[in-house]
Amino acid sequence: MAQVEQMIFTRVNQERAKAGVATLSYSTTMEKYARIKSQDMGDRAYFRHEDPEGNLMTTRMQKDGVRYSAWGENIAYIGGVSDANALANQFMNNWMNSPGHRANILSDKFTGIGVGIYKVGNKVYATQEFVR
Image (cartoon, rainbow, N blue to C red; front, side, top):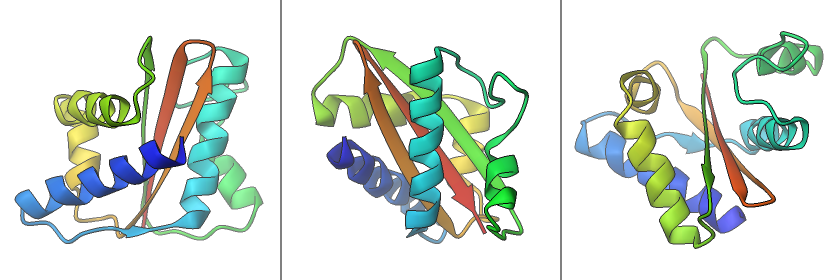
């Protein structure tokens, strides 16, 4: 799944370059939280920004002492696809065709991104954590 994460990161910066927006740096800190989010959604069978207790990932980040001035999150899942290239392309196409997700990807308020992919059964969960 690390290959899919890298492909998504590359595609994010390709989309930003096409839009004339500065590229994002890769954040291993945000990768950690993106992986946590994807795994939590998969293991606990939910799909929303808030976990079952009603917390955003920022609650955990703040508890861990992570500082940021801007934060955003994109989530998605796909079933029945296992090829890394197909997964990365489908996740990015879905996000770029959704106004809110596209806005996060192309936002100039973010400087870093982490991507987390988690597979459970035949579903693959993806999270993008954006930060400044």
